[in-house]
Image (cartoon, rainbow, N blue to C red):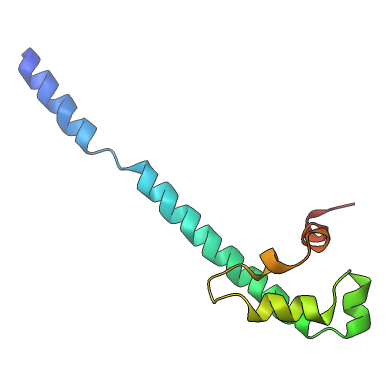
Length: 93
């Protein structure tokens, strides 16, 4: 096998590797969309709670209404909730 043949086969093999940057971007976008839909579903469940139940977790009806009405279909509604409430779901005792 000559040097030219080795270089050609390596060049062909190098071209066959997938572009992982694009794959990573697609996975990140899909993850973001799933997170937004999960948060929107959770916000819909919050909107069904009574005012005293919302007060127990540090929210008001107005907070929930603002988050629901001022976000688009693909925006994360939890970004509009007060900061002290957003972190509560992440804590584990």
